[in-house]
Length: 272
Image 1: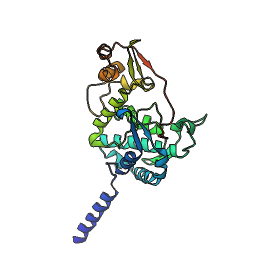
Image 2: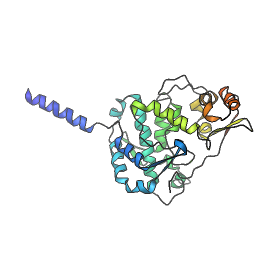
Image 3: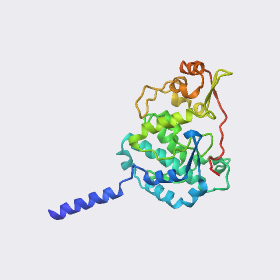
């Protein structure tokens, strides 16, 4: 009897020791050290040169994500799964950049005529070789999985035009607040989203064109707020961030500002 109890206790301790760290402490520490926040918190750059010296810590964190099994993943909460996938996407993107850093000006330099860098299967995840596109489009954006358009403000493509790489890891208990903060930071950045009083148009990131369906499908997302059924409706929630004057804010809030998309800056988000 005593031996059975001891074995059970030993197994429980072993399981606890191997359990995935949902605080993502190792990745969080790297972000705190190597992400430089700019523009009053609306943008960021990555100190890739310093991060390259810290690569062992990055690889150690990624090794823990690679050990997670599909069964283990499926047993987590929805917020835990989403935070995990976003962090993996961002950490793997950094890893990909470091494979050729400092000899590249854009993440696009890592692709070829036949294959974009996002389609390259270069890391293990949930038991299979995976590409960044598999994580973003096959998992995070899969209809019915998370239905969260704000995910576009969380995943980072290592480019100036992309919503900033957050200076901390995403964690389940604060995921909704983090996503909302990312949305507000990005939409408040006049270099990437703004109401133009002269033309009366709302000029926004190309993200809202490329993934338009994510704002027209009635998604409620992690926070469970009212459904998002149009880009105009979504922008109306953030009218005070997108326009400076009362008339402009009223026009955005009423969904009357025609939407135009801006060119995307694919330059590397490097702090050099």
